[in-house]
Length: 162
Image (cartoon, rainbow, N blue to C red):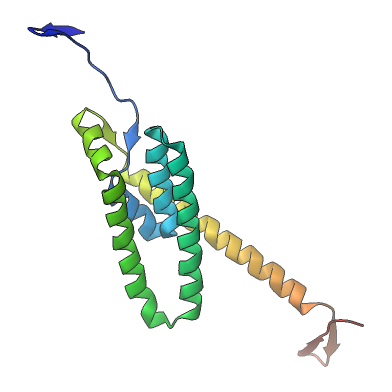
């Protein structure tokens, strides 16, 4: 603690980091909107806004689910423009909702979260999504195939019921 002409000045050290809008966009790029939303939720939790953190995760999950459904049902040529629009929308949303808090945090000596952590978060979410899709596809194919009868050396007939 030091002092100046007006009295003692307390030095507060911010021990936590916050992720800026660029880190949120990086996580989103590699791991869908839920990855970016998870970094925003971490920010909210560190800022003492747990309710907003939970809401952000739920919204991120919902947006990711809608995006996956759209990507599955739209032509591939539409996927890239939609992905880019979504990426910039999430970056802008992060800047709009948390930009001032992040800026103030840095101005008071706080540090930004690592872009490597943002990248790793995105890749981890992507790996989890791929695993869920792989397992659910394998389970549904196995359930749909049911019992089978081998006809010749190359043909199989799958049947359901008795």
